[in-house]
Amino acid sequence: MPSIPVGPMGFEKRIHTRFDKAFIVVIGSELYGDSIAVGRNISGGGLLVEMSYAPPLGTVVTVHFQYARSEDVTDEIVARAEVKHHHYLNFNGAHGTDDQASTRAIGMRFIEFLDPGERVESDRIQ
Image (cartoon, rainbow, N blue to C red; front, side, top):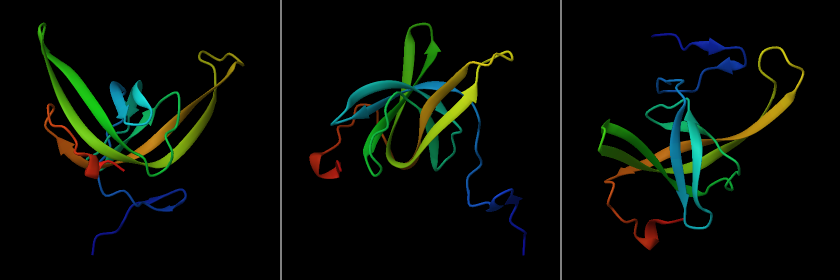
């Protein structure tokens, strides 16, 4: 039986490989509108998003990933995701300064992927 990698806090629970890459996403919510955010630490199961507000735990949002295929063609991937975790990060400023900074991040679990033009029926919105 293969062993499960152990991290500093105990057993590793992640089943998907994570990619720590920063990219811009648009988070859409029926209640809170659209917000531009920074997506990080993405996997097949979800992602971490830095954003200016934290939707309540359990909120289902749409995550819009856009990328330019060419100068005049932009493709989009749209996923529905549930807010599973809130993270508040405190850190020191860049280049050895003593400035304190903070941000908030939201851990999201993917529920489904949609066609970019697909509308979400009201009975699928939580």
